[in-house]
Length: 288
Image 1 (cartoon, rainbow, N blue to C red):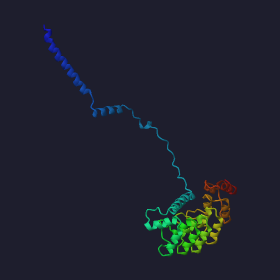
Image 2: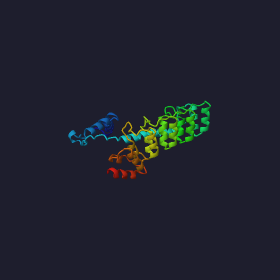
Image 3: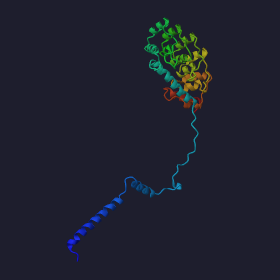
Image 4: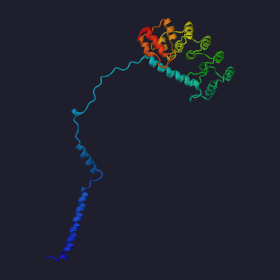
């Protein structure tokens, strides 16, 4: 028989071997952080059932719709607003343009601050050209700024020292509603039958947009035209669509041969304080 003291070393060696084998098996079973996790993720994805094409929910086909028709007066009004806003911004702050020379900036700021006596004196002394452009790329000059300020006397003085009115000056003057300004420009040789290529506006349309029938009539008597602009928009369209139109101005245009239609109802400017009166008048004339 094997003695107990002889079994003790054998049992110790056996226990040690079992422990080593257990540790080695645990290491082999543990997945590596890269490949093992990817394999596990891939196997999990492989177990997710995929829907066949016929089982997918498809969005219903929507028949193609015709593009909305653009009302010419709407697009024209947006363009006019953009152009006139750009013009008025440079007129309110003509010294803010980065492309100005120091001299242009100096003169523009003097005009904006209405220091006209200084400017007129410098023009008369030959230091300053009365037609100098103050903001490159805009055509803004001293005469245009004075007209925008509604300063009739300064406009007269500028004309007297050589300022030359053009199309934009006439249209700005009509937009002020100041008939005296227009009359001074005409006396200096300005044409009243002009149209601004950028905005499509004319002096007659400007007067109509302000509801100024008196100015409109004076313009007609001095060569202005009532023809539609290049977009086919008539003075009556402009009157209805503007924020300054009125029933009285519409009646004035009707007396000149223009005719209302039901389409004019959609043109009424919602912010015109006389909008409801204009709608009621159109409905009374042509129905709704």
